[in-house]
Length: 151
Image 1 (spheres, rainbow, N blue to C red):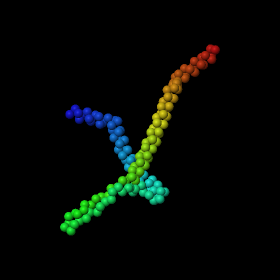
Image 2: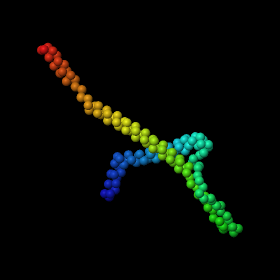
Image 3: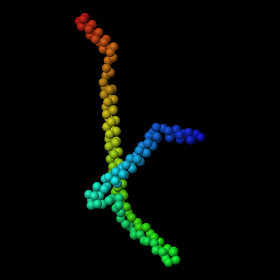
Image 4: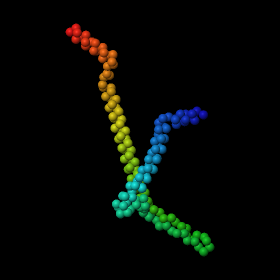
């Protein structure tokens, strides 16, 4: 019973929940990027390269064989599927990776810039002496008036 309680405490920590949310959003973002690459970016690139569709590009390594049945209904020759090296899908995935990596780079850059700006703002607040209260200002005025009157 103690192990279940301990696991529940672990799973409910903020950083574990944040990580789970990040993974879910990351998976959804990956689908969006895949859609962007395969549906929006690759068609114009393929068109520029002469109507080539990368996702359809493949190299046949082994030919397939159609099955042949003998007269008694028994297969005389088993059907064999052809073997392909689908390098076009690999190219699509490389482009997906580059887009995701660039998006993460931009995100980290924005976060770092915002963090630096907040840190700079805090340093400015720490450097500036606190402004005197209204009572202190009034007492300073009285002191200055008395000094002028006596001096």
